[in-house]
Length: 216
Image (cartoon, rainbow, N blue to C red; front, side, top):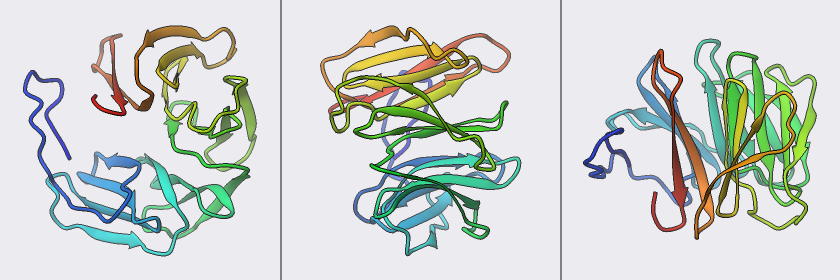
């Protein structure tokens, strides 16, 4: 689906019909294409208006979270099958490299293009992990809650000096370098499933869009 943003008219438009369980999406803003995971095995792409839909790869194991380094031509994604992995490859799935094998699923990732780092959250263990884009220097940035419950932490976004992440119905921000003392920004009555960041060019202003179970 798509709608104009920011706007007072949030009219939804269907641009592409997927198979079951559509997951993460990522935009190639240079070529004007949308990449998305679905059908528990596929990564596909289409134009921004939904035309020219094509399957890029059809034999993955539970692909979900997606991120694109458009400048250098790398795709980063999670595979939530067995074994569960963080992976990078070229946009056509060539030159595949397994970055990290993890104990449980990852439903969200983000790319720090300035520092060339990948960030993601491991479900159940509730760890924020990071790695260089080439897969080196893998580390735990922070264990973000002690509960160890499934789906507690599922959304993450990076912006300059900050990491934004969710825990159930709460939105937090913390310093990317120190990763200490997260600040609570927002509390909702529903679990926040995804998080997107809109930055005005040339302005120090952030707009956060939160997707809940029932409404955005």
